[in-house]
Amino acid sequence: MSPRDPAFGRFSLGGLGGPWGAPPRDLLLILGTLFVTFSLQFFDATRFVPDLLRLTPLVWRAGFAWQLLSYPFVGYGGPSPWILLELLILFMFGRDAYAGLGRKHFWRLVLITAALAGGLALSVQALAERGATLLPLGAYFPLLQGQRVLLAILIAAFATANRRATIMLFFVLPVEARWFLPLEILFAFIGFLGTRDLGGFLGICAAVGLAYLYVRDGGFGRGLRQGRLRLERWWLQRKLERVKRRRGLRVIKGQGDGARGPWVH
Image 1 (cartoon, rainbow, N blue to C red):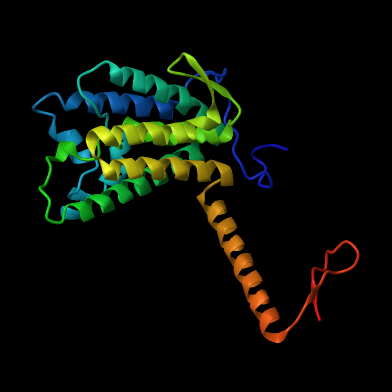
Image 2 (cartoon, rainbow, N blue to C red):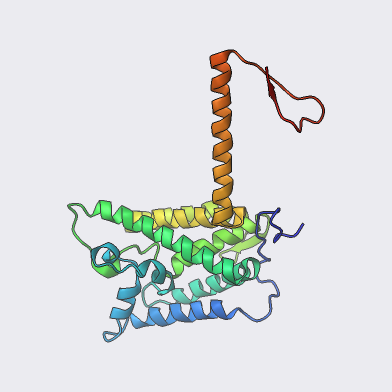
């Protein structure tokens, strides 16, 4: 059965580093934008650009709603070569995600997940700011900004679709991809211990969980429908049990292949 078959209900991302041919232009555009915006923060004349695009409480203070969609594409971090390693890892997982999901689902996964994760982080910050000292705009959500939320989303997507694939953690330790889901949460928690960025930590947790659900269920819409059907089935079962207890009824399973379901006598 093909992973694209609706009956299968899941995406299948290819093996990390597989022969996918030329890198997708969308991914190269993302990487280039991250590096350019990362560089702009170190010049006085251009520092305002990443400040306007990163996720900050200006979303609710001044109506800067675009930050919920722009912040994943603004490179974050200090003047260190570490940014190049993060972009390399993002390229490796992003290429597989793009090839496995296709252009439409790739962008839907990234944009919707990042927006929801950012919204959760902002909600936590709004509650925390009551009576608290306000931070400089550049100090908000260091765990979630820029390439970090993209890494959380795309690594979780890969780990969900390729649970048994082996990846070299830190390019040294062989680890099954499925373990990257809890490892992402663990690394984010360690980052939280150093930054006390509760909003960013919960945002990363949400990003990992949403990416997992998206790939597992074949999209948010399909997952919501399946969740609604499961909830309706649960509610009908509870209702039937209450009727049975109230009226002293008993359920007898149907004869044959059981296709007609239970009969109530």
